Amino acid sequence: MADGAAGGVPIELRKVTKAFPGGGEPAVRELDLHIPAGEIVVLLGPSGCGKTTTMRMINRLIEPTSGDILIGGRSSRDIDPDRLRRHIGYVIQQAGLFPHMTVAANIAQVPRMLGWPRKRIAERVDELLTLVGLEPETYRNSYPRRLSGGQQQRIGVARALAADPPVLLMDEPFGALDPISRERIQDELLRLQEELAKTIVFVTHDVDEALKIGDHIAIMQRPGHVVQYARPAEILTNPASDHVEQFLGGGSSMRLLRLTHVGDIELDRIPYASEDMDARDLLREVELDGRGHALILDGMRRPLRWIAQAELEGIQGPVGDAGEPVTVSIAHRMTLQDALETLLNADTDVLPVLGRRRAYAGALSLGTVQNAIQSIKARERERRLRRGEAP
Image 1: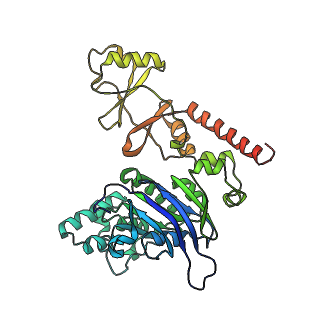
Image 2: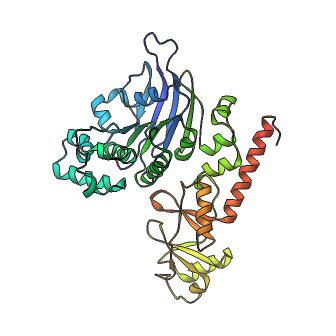
Image 3: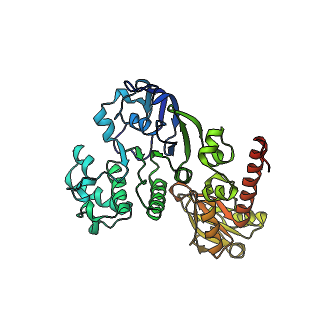
């Protein structure tokens, strides 16, 4: 595990078992799980199914009885436990901040243990406070008792990110928050992940939370094994067993609409180009497309401007800075319900969808959402027919 990793690394659990002395059946039994680099993988299930035990084995707070855990391709058994934990961020419920320390001192814990210079630590504290949406001047010298629950959790996330670890473990981190604060900090986590692309293992027993934030969800059942591991939309439309379906509760197309991410559906494609593309070449693409406009992207594929066919017809040479700025966009992690609301309030009938690093990933229109809803309904009907239910 390299210091200062910019993104995440893969984690692989191979036949991992944990049996506690006198505990009867294993808490975790021969668990195989591949966690891709840069994704949020949620361990979901009822109490006692081995979620937290599995998480704690990743950073060796609990040692496996048998099996192996590879982090970035290297067995965790070959890494000194203290060094391992200093390069894995850990966030727990109610943040677990030290009450006698300032916010800055709490965030600085791991960098200080790693021997960072004071100036670098101070800069990192301010950077992280800004990243989690808290003004450094206001919060760095505050004490945890003066913060709301949501603010404390933000500080907990900042502390876990302090040494820029490739892996973040989050054990029911938002469970004690009120519903509004919980939703806001979930959104904040998704925003941060867009920028940081860490490998995040997230434990929860809340189905809606798992469906909202997870790239993949591992649904666990006693004794400590995975009964379905898939993307949220697949789990909702094609539950692997009666246990999964019962745990998810009554599923409906509307619920799926609320919880399906824009990135899970087939997006529209509209012409796009860089500023140095010849306007005549782009004009031909726009004419073939038939919708009368295109997107201009920067060097990192981030949308800059819309340009209309009429504007292109008057340009000789490169497109340059012609067009109108993109003022509204949709994140690929946004739910279809939120995306629909954004579309209805926008001045245009199509919006660009932004993926990782805010790069252009496709476009969304009311027609795209409508097609997605029809696909959701069709999958739901097929699922019911397969299970012998009335359509």
